Image 1 (cartoon, rainbow, N blue to C red):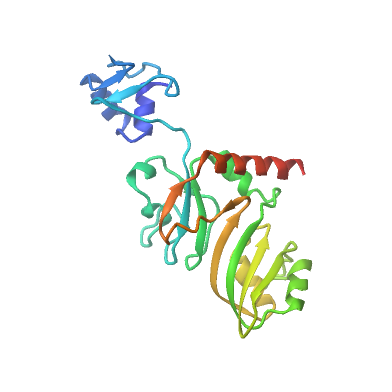
Image 2: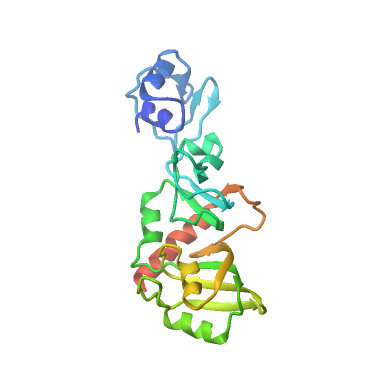
Length: 243
């Protein structure tokens, strides 16, 4: 990889700005000053320093966000706060994007990454990656609802959803439930409950594939995935594809 591309990728400015940085003698590879912007470097094997500080290069970034309500799942918006606005600059420079969407008023697990291949695998309709939600429902959720979800619910536009697993956690006039779906239609969980005469008053995604929301994250907080979690996501997709 060219040294100017590496440095610009991790936030040291545009290619033009990085060339000026190189010409100033501030950049070293293995303790040797490098001024040639076309110089190639292997960031996995060679130590690069800028003004004496070692720089860390990574091609992909994987972030788990506990999305708060009132924030939209987009990379930019002229009038509304986006999930990217919640990131520190050190992470935002990698230009991650949300994998799928959560409604503006929905909370919970949202994966942000710049790994387009993994994102495609997780979102592909052919993969049927399971997504688990916790919800508070206005109305009594019944065994009949469980059976209807298991058979697939007909939405307001006539579309019949794939089978979904519905579990009642707390019964009453207001019911706590968990539901697992394997597709991602617009406002799907809300529309599924509307189809059986009930209303979602609170919705939180708690799991996507094998990745479960880290309960230590407060709303609006995020962290990088561990190597094990990233590998788990990749392996899960391979299993789904083979299955």
